[in-house]
Image 1: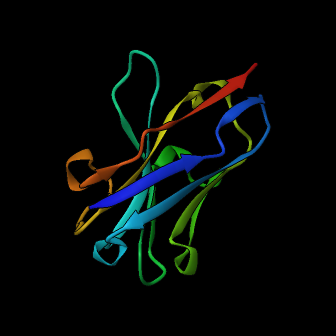
Image 2 (image 1 turned 45 degrees about the vertical axis):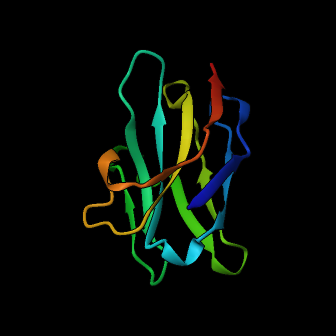
Length: 124
């Protein structure tokens, strides 16, 4: 099993920045990819970004490219999501996810492990 714990959410003003962190523990050697999803009230869970746990490949939702940056620190088993130029429509619960194997990186069903989520609220 892999445990994922998110941190870094909070309240920020329109145009502000936040950095989310996700610490992985347990059988981290089984992880091949990690990522972020988000879910706003009344909406479906949507893909934000993902990366392969080895190598340099990263993947983003088209609508978020240029504002969000995903990164990792393998030595700390931690993944990050830097969010800049935040907008009220970015308000959501952000979930950290991990997969034992992944081909497309952007679908809920690809991920085996989910964190509890962290709330991000962007005020206008």
